Image: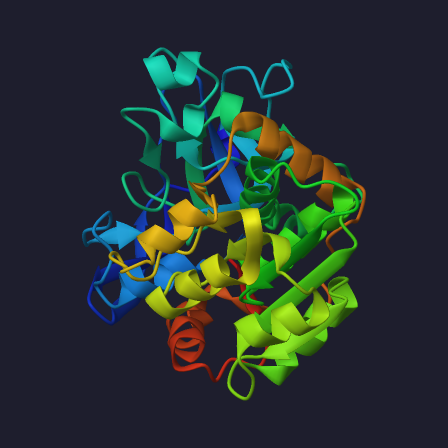
Length: 349
């Protein structure tokens, strides 16, 4: 099997702000308890858009980005997430968040807050390439009837699962999701899986709002033409139980705070602007629960893989398009400019 692995591969390498190039580079060699994965599909994440522009403090060039991926194990060793031994031929998706497993946060079941966590596509080479090395225990099996494109959606879906779990969302509650990008859509799917049926989604794109309705949003608000907070209170007098900010701007964060009812919960997961001025006295007097949501726990990732395996989230043409790895830079620039024809672009190496 090893003889079938080439010495070199094509990789999309970020060279600096707004500079990316398809280059030929060496195929990485897996370390102990790592597997080498032949990448079948890799999604472009919103965090990689800011990184491409040079606005991300975690990423330094030269770098292979890409952390929403799935593919086939071709070499390496170790034990996969389900406890089985790794071997060539296994179809997998993977959790790109590498954690130590022994710090206080890991021992507390909060591996996503590991003191020394690393992210593939930031601290380690990612999957905008034909091959990528991943710790074996971060890999989950993909059923044969689940495409690699669908498997690559496990990572953004896990973000949505974790956010909804932090909110303790349940049937009978109402929810506002601000932003109908990939993460916002995944929050809809995760909320519905927990029994939430009353979901408002706000965005500035009618096209994305139409997709949100197909995913299960009961009401939508175009924030370009309507006041999101006022529109939310019209539908749910007094506010919603939960608001999830999947954008990350000061304006949207404040909208989330003002849209929930007294005692409501606001989940902040958008990583766009670093600092925001918020109405602290209002938060105190209304006893609003303000919670940050970062990535996902192993349990949330496992739940996401299960939801993908049950076809809860599907890579349909209404919101997703597949392109070759060579189209990576053009695709990123379209997503930044807002000219991409769909919400999600997945690259096929």
